[in-house]
Image 1 (cartoon, rainbow, N blue to C red):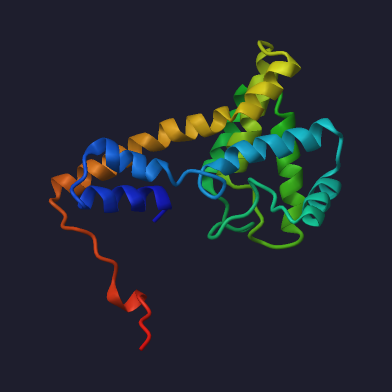
Image 2 (cartoon, rainbow, N blue to C red):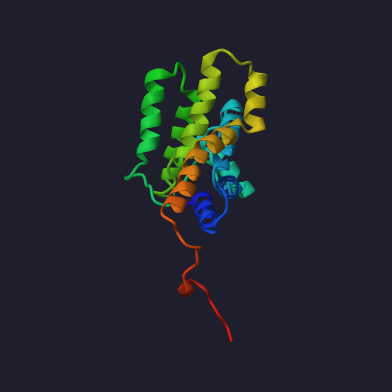
Length: 193
């Protein structure tokens, strides 16, 4: 149901080639689809490095009118967690030498959950914070290099790479199933006289 899959499917059903269909889906990646990983890493890193408490961080974002990237979900709740987030956290706590950014993200989640049950740490926030821990914990990067990696948007690159595999699959499925041109359901279209 995500925009990337939808665009890819519609384009493939229009008879376009693999690259056109893939690019159509990839072009939807941005702040609302995929880009939250980069922004979550940027904001969590900045807040943690400046020593902000979760309260200070969330409330400062609220004053700026910015939603906290990596927090919030349409379906998942405090009592119905995203298994991907849980598995990432379990893996990190077992295999990553330091999980300071992930733990900070969890503390932010604890605060946001006190406001609303759907303000959970989502998979974008989990990946963003764990990527920071991997960079910092590896001992292979200076602080300046980590700052540059986060600013450039490497995580969006990883998202694009991983998502491309699924979008290619959608393209081939539409062609294999010989799906006709996509038409949006008439009942969703408002006509006026």
